[in-house]
Length: 365
Ligand code: GDP
Ligand code: MN
Image (cartoon, rainbow, N blue to C red; front, side, top):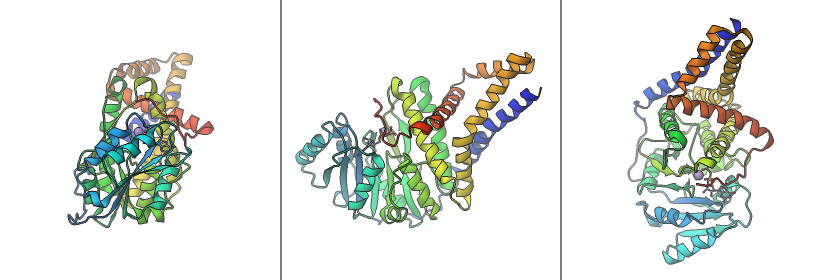
C-alpha cells in the first residue's frame, strides 16, 4: 500500500501545483495593470529580424513589417542574416524595390546562433527601443505602436506578445497548450513580470539591454532570459492582452522536436534564473515556474513508475484502478496536451546533457 499512497501523493503535487497556480494567475488577469500610458511617447525603434535560411518567407515578413502603422521615420528594420540560402539577396531586392531606405540587410557571413546575431545588432543600434521580430511570425498592423505604448511607462522595461498558433498542431495540442500558456503569461505580467517572452515580438529598452550585458549566448532562450534579467533589475517585463502575434506551427513530423528544443531552452533559462534573488511577486513566479519546468515532470514520472510497480509486483487493486483512470483520462484533450508537455520536458532535460541546441536544426513549417 506504501507504493500506492506515495504515488497518489506525488500525483497530487504534480497536478495540484500547476492547477493552483493557474487558478491564481487567472484571478490576476482581472487585476488592473498599474501602468501609466503616455500616448505622446514616440521613441526611435530598431526592429531586428534574425534569419537563418528563411528564403521562403522573408518577403512575406518584410511585407508584413511594412504594414506597421508606427511612424516610418522612427523605425529601422535590420535583417540580421546568417543563411546559406538566398534570404539576404531576397531581402536586399525587396528593400531596393520598395525604395525602403530604412530596411537594411547585414550578412554575418557565418552562422553562430540567434543570440549572437541579436547582440551584433545591439552593438550597432542607436535607437531607444530594440525589438526582436522572428521571421516566421506575423504581426497585426498596430503591433509596434502597441508595444511602444506600454513602454511609455518608465517602470516597464520590456514588452512581448501573446501567441496565436496558425494551425492547431497534432490533435489540437498546440492550441490547447497556448490557451493555458497565454493565461499564465498575462496573469504573471499583471502580478509584476512574466519570465517567459516570445521572440516573435519582444521589445526592450536598449539601455536596459546594455545593463544586463545583451542577450545570453549560452541558453537558447535569449528572449525569456533577457526579460527575466530586466525584471530582476526591478523593471516590469510584460505581455499585455492587447498584443497578439501569429506563429507558424511546424508540420507534424517536426512538431515534437520543435517542442523539445524549446523545452530545452526553457530548462536552461530557469536553471540559470533560479540562482537569482527576485523580490516580491516575482520571487514566487520564478519559484513556481522553475518548479514546473525542472522538477514537476520528474514527480509525474516517479508517480507513474510507482503505480506500474504496484500493479506488476503486488497486483494491487488500487494500482489497477489508478492505471485505468489514467488511461480513461487520455480521452481528454487538455490532459493529453499536459502529458505531452511533461514528456517533452523530460526528454529536453536529458537532451541538454549532450546537446543544448544553442544553434539549432531548423524545423520544417
Ligand atoms: P523557434 O521559433 O523557437 O522555432 O525558432 P526559429 O527556428 O523560428 O528561429 C527564430 C528566428 O531566429 C528565426 O527568424 C530564425 O530564422 C532565426 N535564427 C535561428 N538561428 C539563427 C542563427 O543562427 N542566426 C541568425 N541570424 N538567425 C537565426
Ligand atoms: Mn519560430
